[in-house]
Length: 172
Image (spheres, rainbow, N blue to C red):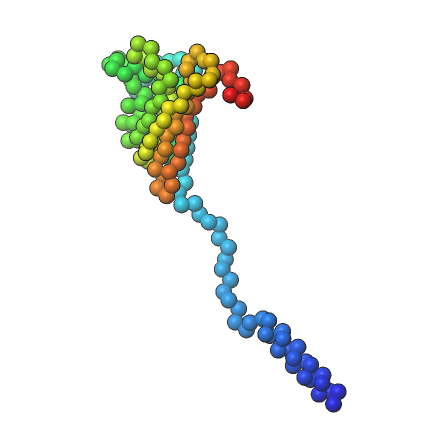
């Protein structure tokens, strides 16, 4: 009789164990790292201390580097332009021609047709741009920040090209 109880208890324990563990295990999905929908290469260049006249050969070389490095978006600070002066190469227009990119320019200062400012270049469409001046800062060069919204496919991306005043505090 005792043997019979042990058999029944063994069967009940087996049923409980198998009841909790299904016979057919569901396929375990491998954990994959989620791939980003799009990857953008972004670079920045500050021309504020470039003391030479910008020639076409410099821009052609820059375009080659950007293509080789597969850069999609370029922000440039401290650009000096002379629109309408045929003896000067316009950095904005020439780089756009060499790369076939769109551009946005944010003017910081305009003295007798000599413009200084920041730019954003993009291989993707530029949806909007806004130039934010630093009105509350005392500066000699009227530094500013150019905000450009870029259509990056799945989402738009806001890129800021900014030149801060040299003596700006961390708080500013």
